[in-house]
Image (cartoon, rainbow, N blue to C red; front, side):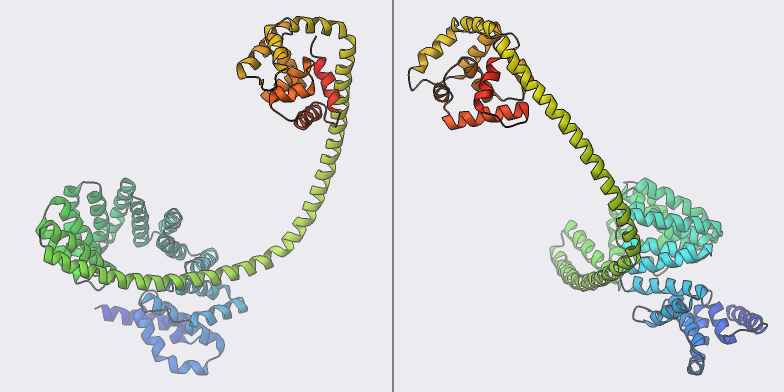
Length: 526
């Protein structure tokens, strides 16, 4: 019955194609129409007409190559080493044939995806996504981009692509694509260990899967639900779902169902059922699945005290793991080289596309920077002039103050000489080994504050000073000689001079004689 339907469909397509004039052979158009719905039939037609292609012009040959590539991909035949799509893409790009260029871009993406070159695959998928106006094709391409992002462990980006695919699949009422979009989103949430979110999307996929009335697709949904229930400690709720999945899963999905089932039965403590699932996984042809089986059987035998069997599976596990790592290292080198080549090409493209923009930008930037620099220069010049005038007025203020209040200074100094600490310092100056201690500095500061309230605060308003500089200023105010100051503070004369000169410059922002600073300090003693 199915063969009869296919023959009738083929006859209708040939009849439709023969009704109009076209530059392509009718058989080729029929093969193109069948590539999506019946790729095996399309391949049979294409192979039958392959000997005629040498006689056709280049337009027909390129369309034949594109259709053949499409049919191979839809029939799940390997396209990893088929680089014929390169010449097809170049032809349609140079010709400006937007309709066929869109398909060529998509299959360029498929070629790079199959070869593990994610950056270039995404680049071509994006081009095809932007070019197509078909909602169904946008859904397919978004799903492909999501799978690439998932393989690169870019789960947030993958979710974005899968959601885009869901949007377009919903618009074209494609229940199958909607189901797979929900499944993919749920899977990425599961990878991120967001189990409740994953479960919500699996349950959203379930009505669409049931609408399709396909037990294999329903089993995919049930497997995801069972896995997330198991990982959240709800193994009993997962049991009916995994039993259905074990019964109806497609052969390509059966190993994934067995992995979930083994984890579920382990959680339930059903050692016998777990062992049966693991024995099935051990026979699987896929290396990673078999590796999981070896590791789980190793743990199972250890739990059950079978040391010899555990050692046997330990050897199997490490041998297979070494083989997989060697393969991964080789693939990683190839991907790294592909990424390096892609980056080089992207850099060249960026240089060409940005050159004109950069020139314009630099001209505007130079004008703007010049304007800013001139404005800032004028502002700084004005500020510096005002600041210089302020410091000059400040200096004259203190010099005039010192001359005007000399009598009051003499009175204050008389009072200071009556203080106990002053007498102690005067007595100690005569001995070479006398050094001021912390408590003596504190006592001197308190004595000055009693006679000249807020003396230290007024000095700090003049300029910023540290504790050692304040000690120096107190001794200068008491008219103690520089030699004695050097001895009391345990500094050299040159160091004392440098500090006085530094303080003067800090206060008035100009170079000055240290003796001038001494006069300023003495003006604070009234």
